[in-house]
Length: 159
Image (cartoon, rainbow, N blue to C red):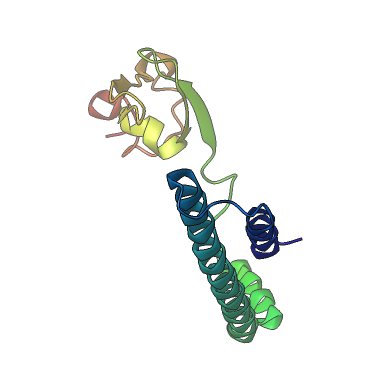
């Protein structure tokens, strides 16, 4: 039994009681039943509109899926991944990354060797400037770094 059928049943029960229509209580009960009847019809209309809107959204979703499959064909994906083979400059061995822990906030940061050799970096988490000093690790005899990155560049015997 749906809501409109239930309200019709209640309306029939009140009419079957043969209540005195002149009493204020009966007038209130009849007004409540009429109000419930109006609400039930409005609710039924809203349910129908909801179903119609839901069908339209499903159609739009299907149309969008069709457009996406047309635009992003699987063959295109394979071509895009093949393009990555063209990058010869990228090599993990050429520019390794190191994990550095910020002394202020304890955040672990992955830093490239080039950044380490520059001497400092700002922590992306807290903004603390982290400084790296490698001068004590190198002597002029065993220095094999390119002088432009050498931490002892100013004091280097090669210059």
